[in-house]
Length: 362
Image 1: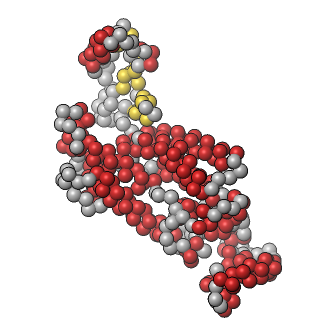
Image 2 (image 1 turned 30 degrees about the vertical axis):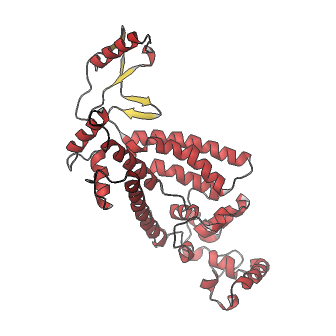
Image 3 (image 1 turned 180 degrees about the vertical axis):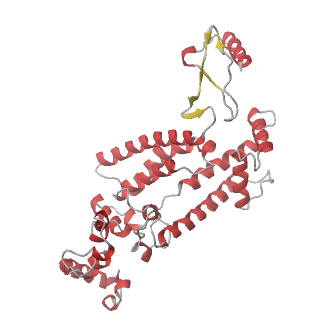
């Protein structure tokens, strides 16, 4: 390290440049089992500080290369950018879905994807929460809305798929570098070190490529094809998990039931829904989303806050019936005038609508 600093000083003298010593630090990258160096490093006549973390080109590097710390730092930066997008949405009085998505991709995802080739071989809740926050805001739903319903209606590409596309692109680029380059030598060292006893970045990438059925020994394979295959593989895994979350009976945590009781009746494909793409007041889209996702302010949901048993969450107008989505939309006489007018419009599009069962109408 000191030899590198000496060479740097010589280079600066030759090129008549100076180093800002006040902004220069030294960080000792090492495993947890290795003690921090006790050496003293100097740049010119100034002793450099030995630090445990350093921010370089927007990425937070820690002395033990903790990727979780790096991901949290990226998530904070992306959240700040998302706040700017939300502010722009509010100042404009709303944005079309396509415009909002474009702003999210260019202003928020660009920050996440910038360093994803380093930390993106793992999935982090702090990164996923940024996209969930953006989706919840556009749909107008709260944080207690099931994630599967929010993601299923917004239909954006899952974060994990995009992460791995960046990672495999970097993997393909590094393995085809010139052998005299330092990056390639580090890559080969990582390859030799990887194994069950050393599950490093290279090991995780190789494991996923094998799971996806990609021949990692084919050095002439098209990098773009490899990235797309990994993306599709991760997308399919995500969709399988999404369907499982939608169709499970019980909540993921606690003893409650899954709120997506109505959602699973009509939603079986992961895609952006038409109502999301339509231009409508945000309050209308919010109400529609809440009914679909089982968080509308009706008794079956608000009864949770009162800790009422399911059979006690009764309609204020019809005391003998549980106020769920089916009751509000199809049965409750309080909304009969709205229901009659709306069903008349539906009957023009669907043959024999009045003869259909309650479930089919719903």
